Structure formats: structure tokens, C-alpha cells
Image 1 (cartoon, rainbow, N blue to C red):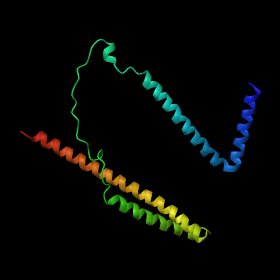
Image 2: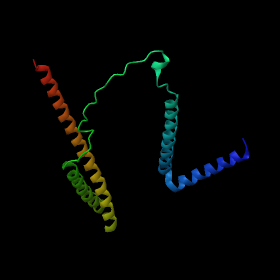
Image 3: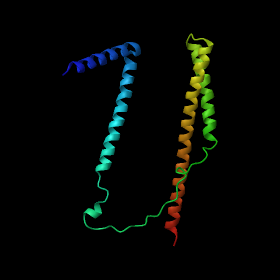
Image 4: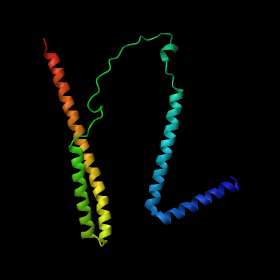
Length: 166
């Protein structure tokens, strides 16, 4: 190894030690996880691109025969494939989650810590955002589950009606 390589290694170790004292061990580990995730994403992208380019897409012509083209009917898009309104449940649940999260967060900060009122308000706003996200997530899940079940039951009834026709 050359002297330049050792110099870069010393610089890397010095930066790592400075980052550990500045961020703490948890912050350093979080940074390592983020960097490892980015590296895995780039490596997976490169590997996928290489595999896609190496794939033979027309195997039938290499084997000496041609497969007949088959017309595949295009199904109607389901409700979940169409874009539309979220309904009334989602915004109402997000608002309720935001209000409850903000109230609980502000109350917890005032009751259990020695923070100022400004800190409690900022913490309450943060809690309201998190509560709103949880409300939105829960309501979206319930809406998708309800729609999926309704479509599955309707498809089952159509299939049963088609089987009972003489």
C-alpha cells in the first residue's frame, strides 16, 4: 500500500472518531445504517440493470418456432386501481388523530417534564402531526380493507349467480 492510501485511512478514522463524539454512538450507527442502505440501493440497481440487459427476451425465435399471438382480454380496473376521492372517513380521522395527538403530547410535556410553555406548544404541534399521520394511516387501512371486502363479496356473488344459471 502507498502512503496516500494510509493517509486517507487516517483521515477516515479521524472523521469517524469526531462523528462519534459529536453525534454519539447512536447517531453514528444511524449514519452507518443510512449509508449502508444507500449503498445497497445503488448496488441492487446496478445488478438489476445488468441482469435486465443480459436477458434474452425472445426465446421462441432462438428455438426455431414462433408462438401464436393470443388476444388477452383486458379486465376492468378494480376500485383500488382507479383514483378517486378518499371519502369522508380519512380526513375526519386524520383531524381527530391530530387533535388527540396534540392534546396528549402537550399534556404529557407539561405534566411530566420541566419544559417551558413554548416548548410544550412546539412539542404539541409535533405530536399533532404524528397523531394526524396515525389517524390517516388507520383510516386509509380501514377504507382499503372495506373496499376490498366489498369487491370480493360482489365477485363471489357474481360467480355464484353464474354457476346457478341453467
